[in-house]
Each structure stands twice: as C-alpha cells, then as structure tokens.
Image 1: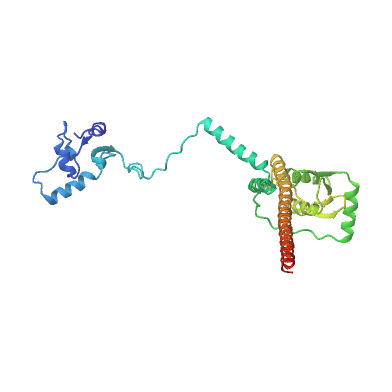
Image 2: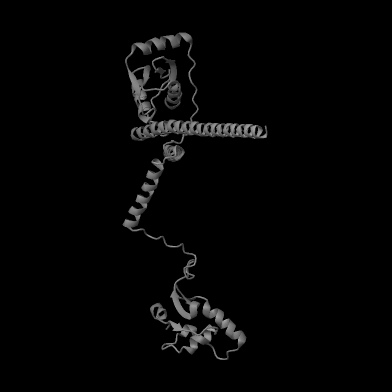
Length: 331
C-alpha cells in the first residue's frame, strides 16, 4: 500500500552537493522506504539516468501528484501540481512596503512645506509656475471625470420627420404660444427626466414649450437638436427668450420607455454640470496665468535690455572721458 501524502511531505533529507538524486535518496536510509520509489536491481549508467528522470517527474497516487524538488541541496516532496510561480518565488512581484501612519504624516508635511515655499517665493515666476502647474493638473483631472458621464449613444432608429407647410407651422406656433404647458431645462441640461416630461405633456397636448434657463448664447440650438433626436418631435420655433416650441407629430404614439436609455439621471446630470462649471473656471484661470507669465517674461527681457543699454552708455561715456584726459595730457 503506498504511503499517504502527509507521510511523504514529512520526508526532508539533507543531500550533499553534486550527487545523483537517486543515490542520495537511498543513501539517506529513510525509516520507511516508499514502494513508489524503490529501485530495481542492476543499476548502470543508462538505467540510472532513466530512473533519475522517472524520480524527478511527478508520480500520481490516485488524483494526487507527488513531486520531488532538490533545489538548494534538500529533497522536498510536494503534493499537487507545481504552479508557475513555485520556483523559489522568483516570478513573484516584490512586496510593497507599508508606510506607517507617522511616515505618511511626515510625507504630507514635507509636500505642504514645499508648496508653501513656492507660494511665498520672492521670485514671481516661481509663484506663477506653481499655480499654473496646479491648475493644469486640476484641469486634466476634471476632464477625466467628465469622460465618465459621456453616455454611449444607442443606435438610432429610422425616423422620418413630418414635412409641415408654412400654414401648419404658423398655426402650431400660435397654438404653442397660447398654451401654458412647458418643460424647464435648467442647469442640469438635457437628461432623461426632460424627455419623460415631454412625452407626458404630449399625452394631452399637441404642442409644448421647453424653457431653457440658464442658457449660454447659442446653447438653445444645441438643446433643440438634442431634444428633437431623443423625443422624435419637431421643432416649430425658437424664440429669443430661449424658449423652444415642439410639436409631437400627426401619428404620435407614446413609447413604452419614455426616458431614453442613453441619457443621464437627474443626480448624474447635476454632477456633470458641477464638473463642467469647475472646468470652465479652471480653464479661464489657466489662460489668465499663462498671460501673466508671458507678461512677466516680457518685462524681464525689457528690463535686461534696458540694463544692457545703460551699461553700454556708461562704458561709452567713460571711454570718452579717458580720451579727453589723454588728449589734454599730450597737449
């Protein structure tokens, strides 16, 4: 009966270097020789090499593989298939050193002290460059944040917009102006709730108004195009007070999902707006700092040029005085 894996794991022997594993194993004289590794009589060179290969290859006992490892001058038995990273831990990544709480605090103090020195530097260029680098890092961080809020566009279905005559447009425009049903588009912009409210209004009314406040100059046209794509409605008119009049269509059928899946939720739309506002102000601040740095460099160059001209003028005057003194001495 072959020995159990726990018995095999307990057999670890000290082996002399540069010796055959098979002979080293039998020279160790184990207390319980394993019948799996018992040598056959009549050992010669070829048979010894063959037995050595058989000895080093894993031997299976049922569903368990038994392997002998002789690295480092020791014979070690292991149960199970050897993994890819079991070669003395050579392929394992180095363990990360954990920083203590005190070292982290000291590191933060060092960074703050370094920033404080730059902020209070007597050289204006150092202060401007520090602010500019910090603002650019914030700008990159905001751009990365805004990429997460880019909703993937769903494949658009074939939509054939209705062709309206001028009389129909005039009638629908007057009707939309008289009615008081409207949907507000605020700082969050266009999101799923706006389209949902449009479909709810179109359940009882043919036309409706979309009031965009606050709205930058020209942004109302972007809102009109986006809402027409999402709601499949028709834009009748865009007023100067940033109000859009939409018409649902003659053959309007309310969709089962009134809020499109490729739009943001109310909370995420607000977060996106905040990041956009921060990015806008940061970009303006970066432009201001770049202009300030450019003006300072021009001022320094002009100052050096003036200094060079003054020093040259003084040297010319000194040379003229020297010439006069030499001429008077000769006379």
